[in-house]
Length: 444
Ligand code: ADP
Ligand code: MG
Image (cartoon, helix red, strand yellow):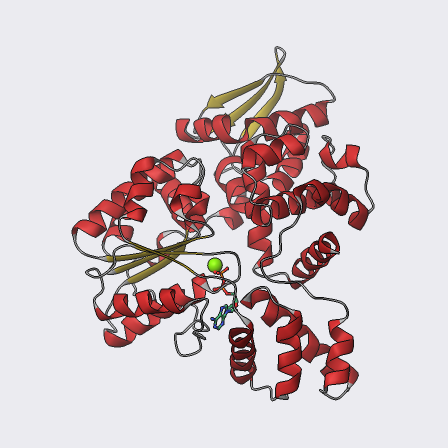
């Protein structure tokens, strides 16, 4: 592989989501600088267009950084020159697209998320009632069901719970649960491998379609187009669709009006942050699930101190249980209070957007010029992405505005940053902790 290209790829890898990297860049090849242009080969026009419209700035900046000068990019289409066969290690990048097609998707539904262990309270009883109506009359009562609410409030849990409940009623049901990212991947792969029929068969032959986090449709034109048709097809056949998002349709930027109106045409219901009683009940449910017997007064104490969402509650609970087990200490109020430290993230809190960047700089000990500047060092990139995430999730700023605040970055860069942290947050408790600490500091 061209040496410079290898370095460029290393930078890009840090800038875009893993999926985007695999889709658009991993298989490209490069001839380096030819007649004053940096020549890159991709396999299809579609890839070229996607890179051009969504990742041009990331690509240009990476090339500039490696070559030490700005240089025009010449993206060319050549299926023979792209690296699909050349590089066996790329096999790792193959996304296992249609492997789950013929089976029912039982394995696809997270077994942890059933309705039996979903706690119903004031914050989510409407959403729960709507879910029950869907279970009673799939495809007929509320189609689509659009669940929205902040991160960690139980949207995925409830949606997957409906899947389990319907599967119990009819074990032959073909259910597709797919985060929007997966739908996009499948689509891209369908286009690349000229297997759109397979793609359409997969998504249109199910009896229940669950699509998670549709806020990421924002600005993805081809995904929106295909999603619209999938949606119409299924709705026309009275097949139930459930989608989730972190906000209502009209607040999703760059969403085609026809899709927004489809979403609004069904039942839209939000899930709020859990109130105190619900928080205690969630903690109890988690203890029961994991077989931990924790005194009630300790759970109350945690619920008093963590008044945000289910994910943070669960995270803190696990952290406390682990620490106490490791140190052999007793599970009592005093020890729990000590471990809770000064966390007291309050519900309905609002972070002042003006403080965010300074707060991030202070936390990571970096300079503002570096945070908003072009440097792509890994740590800086991560700090920047965390800034994007907080400005987006907690300050509710649009991508464009965040881009401006961060030194004039393109909105797609912000979108990827937010998405990247969102994906990491699902599995990495360390980053959950970091973001929690930063937010706490911003509230102090
Ligand atoms: P979201 O999709 O809204 O970001 P999740 O559904 O992933 O949130 O929930 C985050 C975590 O919190 C999960 O472990 C989930 O089980 C838990 N949780 C959230 N709300 C509830 C609830 N009402 N009952 C039980 N667990 C909950
Ligand atoms: Mg979710």
